[in-house]
Length: 388
View 1 (spheres, one colour):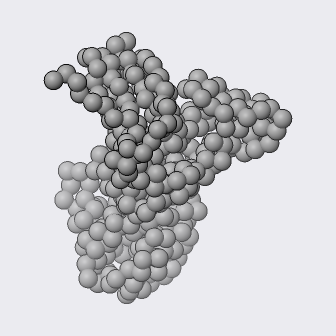
View 2 (cartoon, helix red, strand yellow; view 1 turned 180 degrees about the vertical axis):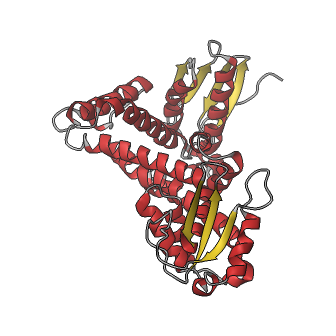
View 3 (cartoon, rainbow, N blue to C red; view 1 turned 30 degrees about the vertical axis):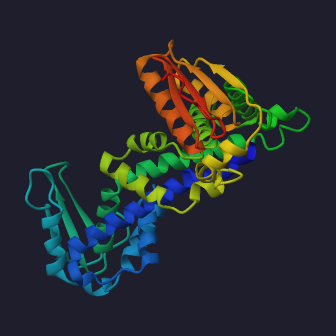
């Protein structure tokens, strides 16, 4: 399980970050076409990816890379010297309630002016952008044209940059905790490796042990340990869900993205992430990525050929987190009698949705016994109706 958590970083967090960059590429392309039209020409896919990656990455270094990639755009040398074209951009950059953006395209007479973005002098005879902010703070900002474009592209991707940065922080948190446990399992039994976990309580206890092992040895400021713990446990829950269902919990991933992106971009990023062929299955440590599909296809055969004696486990989940135990038994090939009479209405619906999805993925069935009790069965158990 420890190895699965390590490998899962590539499939989940890094996969989502790549999907964010792909979404940024689409937005950047639309924006550049809006600004420059056919005069821009076709952008090389590698350059577009670099531009999207830098523009969606926080920090001054990323900002300077964005500027550099702007200068590599097709025909940029000619575009940056086209005063009429640059002046027309302000009609696409109007602030809320304004028709145009308050700026002018000017020619530098000397090298006394410095760029607001890169802080370098603006060469003499160079076309630059003079931005009038007198109504805001009484200042006037001057920009190299490429710095101006980079600044606007980064502003366009502000939400994506926030989402990507949050995922990067989560990745660092998870890697730190796992690295702090790379040698902690020696001589401490299988439970410390996560190989002998049989219940939800075992799993949570193991995760807490991993975090405590890291906490006592880390040099991270104690003020940030709660954030590390939250990031780590949230990620571990996602990977655990995957191991139970064979599918990524889209709702969990979408909820994390929704803290930074509006709904349309959340949907777009998730769509691009789920289009990545076997990206999740390859990296989360699932031993047989085709297991769920084969189970469904062999449903009829398994019913007739299996003679294994199966157990029926009773579970009474009260909150959604308790559904992990239900899933563990079903994935192990056992029937489960699930009592939801003590769960709230909201948790009951979530647990039923989870159990239904898992049953379908395994090729099994879910039957309601009473209004609050359900029977989940694996594919090699046949339920016959004797009521008629």
